[in-house]
Image (cartoon, rainbow, N blue to C red; front, side, top):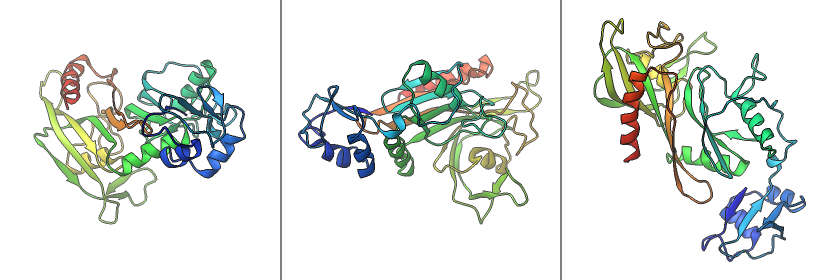
Length: 311
């Protein structure tokens, strides 16, 4: 973790800065104190009683920053990096790739590629995903590069200050915009499937229609491109809500017929995330194109992207 001290964070002891300003636990500070180069000012190790000054750079080596901490197998491969600083790492996740290793996917997950990326840079670190994307969903995925950063980003989500916008291709004609406020719970007798249920947890999805495709030569049905924002993070939330509304996503085998006349796979892409740097408070906006979508759709998405930048 690295931060440049300013008028807000400077003129205090390092212990005060670490506890009160950066939110580290006593255990984290204690571990860093006794680690070589654990707590440094401008590259020189210092005691926690040292008083920092504005303009100085404070570096803290947390336990999870050490190379021997993670158990993910590093794998070399292609990564589309959207944003990176000392605390945050954001990538464009390809479709069909799990975020973390699991049964049958011990060496082909996004986490494996990220571990390989940092191994190649000779700066291994253990990143933590802020939220998740289903294996079939592509798009922006943000990671905290240390425990404190990940915790602060997660808190932003809980407080509604972390925005995620999705592009969904759905069956049928859906016009206008609106909210879907239907609780979501597990479907009875199903391992993976969810459903709208009165016994479920609250779930809120906002949608806005962007384009309706009705060229019968290109499509065997009407298809709508919809911008969605979720205010809760329920499993399969957009997929469940759109299917409940009568517009299942293209390529959705779980909640629809699985057909996608445009490209193989699920028509769902997380194309934008807006959040704040955990320690400086700077606003960060990250966008990702669904490069596997047809060119005609990418032109539409370019216009959506420009409108979002203006906000």
